[in-house]
Amino acid sequence: MKLEKSIELYTRGKKHLVGAVNSPVRAFKSVGGVPIFIDKAKGSKIYDVDGNEYIDFVLSYGPMILGHRNSVVEKTVKKYMKNGYTFGASTKGEIIMAEMVCDAFPGMDKVRFVNSGTEAVLSALRLARAFTGKNKIIKFAGCYHGHSDALLVAAGSGLATLSIPGSKGVPDEAVKNTLIAEFNNIKSVERHLRKGDVAAVIIEPIAGNMGVIRPTDKFIKELRELTKSHDVLLIADEVMTGFRSKFGGAQELLGFEADITCLGKVVGGGFPVGAYGARNEIMEMVSPLGDMYQAGTLSGNPIAMACGIATLKELKKRNPYEDFNKTAAFLEREMKTAAKENGIDLHVNRFGSMINPFFTKVPVVDFKTAQTSDTDKFKTFFWKMMENGVFLPPSQFEAWFLDTAMTKRDIYKVRTAIRLAMKAVANKHK
Ligand SMILES: *Cc1c(COP(=O)(O)O)cnc(C)c1O
Image (cartoon, rainbow, N blue to C red; front, side):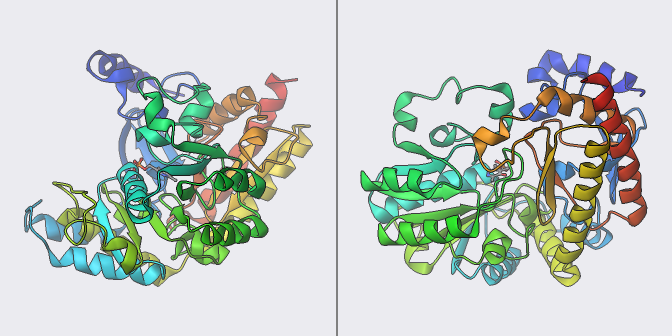
């Protein structure tokens, strides 16, 4: 595999960028070797600076659900570029976008757009505290909610892979009101709720940042009832799952309604957009209607809104969710068969267009079981997939994503790569 130009850029980049990246997972630290640098992408394919072509399962960690540079989206973005980039005053696009989002999520009467998932979630916590007048937040081990201070505990993916217990620079006071519960374990939530002063429980309703883990129907149902009976808000962090699991996100799929919903990733179609929303009674706390302050110079950016609107419209029209399911089921079967033929312990978790294998004997239902995965095996698997033209997230604990641009031919190519990669794992890890 030729990576000379990536190596050159990596070496050069390290001088003035931290680890040559702007987000840690891009440094490929948990799979070793040199991170690839991207030249361009189109449809289901992404190309690095050495000219290697890959079928893209990273998709910028979720946003590119229509594949790269969908022609309708690209045309729309180009058109809006001509009108100017940002105004610091409102545009019609923000209203259309808000109508589309509130239509997709019945629990949202009003929405506020921000610039990232991190920002959406930290604002949602402030809102929950403002609305309830209470201080504590319950989060689940292994769920990631962005990099704000209060949520950088037991936070999955990047942190899970590096085994860092949180992060340096976060004062104890910032996390003293953050309580940790176990995913799929309602008793662990109940225990915290009994102590009182809880403003909200925040959850990735389908976890995607410790690998893909789905909640049991019973757990979600009980979580909704329990929070309601304690007058505690339920925050669905659908930054990854919004418009990805289904148009109405994990809430539509699992059949529940959160009090506050956070969005990001797909909602911007590749531009920086985050959002949080809730019923009127809650959103009326937010400035300028209420006394909870939250603002943003570039929030609701017109180009980002245009891209988001075009992406959501196209997505709604295509309704690809059943096809995603079928493709994911095919990939699951292929991975399991290849693993079995090679005597490798493997579990595959998937939900809609999110899927990933865990190299473990144990069914993965929470953070603890996710961590039984053999990350060395994943490392071997990852590089063999790359060699055979499949770009995967460079971590055992990141979900792979599907897009509507993937063809049958792409998927057969992936199948071949899977077979070769499982063989390589068996050979290397006897
Ligand atoms: C990606 C992600 C975030 C953070 O979003 P950013 O745009 O990276 O700040 C928050 N929550 C979940 C569930 C995510 O997947």
